Structures are given as C-alpha cells and as structure tokens.
Image (cartoon, rainbow, N blue to C red; front, side, top):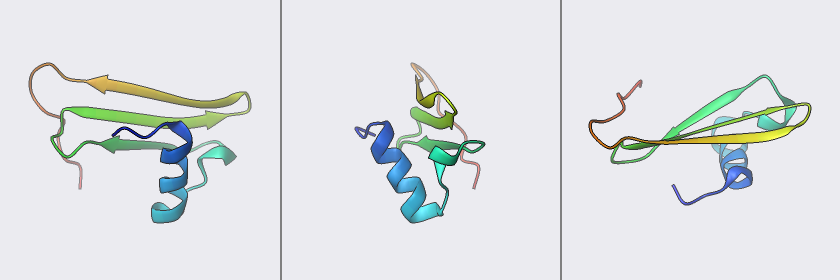
Length: 63
C-alpha cells in the first residue's frame, strides 16, 4: 500500500485491464490486513487518490 497514484493506475491497467486515465472508472485497493483502502479515479482535470485508514474494525472483502 506504499504505491502512489501512478503506480496504482499501472497495476489496474496491467492486472485488471482498466485504463483509469480514460475516466469513468473507479478502482478500490484494500490492504492485506483490511485496515487501509485506497480509491483511485480520474476525470478531465486529473487523477485523484483517496486513502482511508480504519482505527478499529476492518473493511469487508467484496470478492
């Protein structure tokens, strides 16, 4: 989870075949411990990354 926005976009392109820079897609990365998640998205003005760290509890696994 140390990666920056550009590295997460590259991972989404390589592993998931999602081009975040095109816009319209949002990709959520969840840490192995399920305590940290990072959301990466893009629009016409640039790319954004939102980081959320839980102090208690865990994010639920979706898949």
